Length: 251
Image: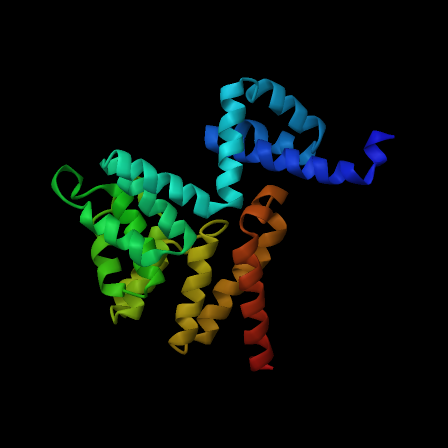
């Protein structure tokens, strides 16, 4: 039977990848993500014929998957677009692709050159520069870029905040950095920030305080939904590993 064919598993995975990618791009994740995950084949078919029905949409998904598999192909296309039309949007699209592909210096050069005129305080460019400066460990410029956007509602408790708090501590503004970490130290959320806060406390020789935070993070896992566990898996796993290290040293 078809469902017992060994190729069925791989077909199901491919369908899930296509549907999840399209779902995120369209902003439909709240409505569809659980159907796709928990009904791998049937859910994908329902989503496919409900949401990816036009040839235009199919073309977009194929293009997106191609970029994921071959990012250099996407970069070449964006470089060609820029040569054809040197606009702000084309510049930033190329910089974003460079940053995602690891060409951080190229990305920074483009971002910085575009922070002028009407785009001098562009929020997306500044947020991307925060990420790029962190890659280069350029904490002073990271702090400068972050402080232009960190108070905006859309950046509250986001990845930029964590990078900003970490950069402050690395640049010698320890008390200010800890204040930023403390703002994000709330239960059942901000797991990246809390993990990084614990690492900061350990660097400061405050292992007992770090142990408290890591213990709280690990204890919260059993209360999270399966979706939340998957979403935060990376930070939860790291927190558990660091907690184990602390406890082994303490004996």
